[in-house]
Structures are given as structure tokens and as C-alpha cells.
Image (cartoon, rainbow, N blue to C red; front, top):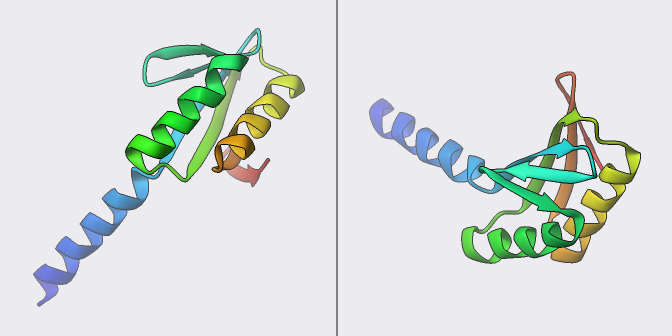
Length: 97
């Protein structure tokens, strides 16, 4: 019984992890995720596609390589238009955008 509960918790954690995708803020602003570099205009389409195809419900902006507040605002707007929740993770803390 304990083995079944352990397996179920692994599947639950895996399913949760797949509903969230991380993006790195780059100078421009541009965004990097899964090996893709996206401009602000491409970002919304990409978020919409991963929501539709993969069931993503949250996108997380992590780190920064010269990005600024404008980059955060554009990221939050793209997520909102795509119907997913936007989060920002910095120094171990996560906040909603």
C-alpha cells in the first residue's frame, strides 16, 4: 500500500511540474525557454501554443541577463492574453506578476 502511495505521489509531482514552464529574461527584452530565444511579439504565440499543446497553466520568469521592468511587464501581458498565470522567481522567492 505504501508503495502505491509513493508511486502516486511521483506521478502527481510529475504532472504538476509539466504545467509550469520557465523563461529567462534577456536583454532586449527577449526570453529564453527550452533552447528557444523569443522576442516580445513571439512570446505570446509560444505561451499560447504550450498552453494548448502541453496544458501549461503557469509561466515563470527566472533570472535576468540584462532584462528590465519592461521585460517583466511584457511577459505578464503575454501570459494574461494567453490565459496562463505569470510568476517571477528571484533569489529563491516567487511572486505573481
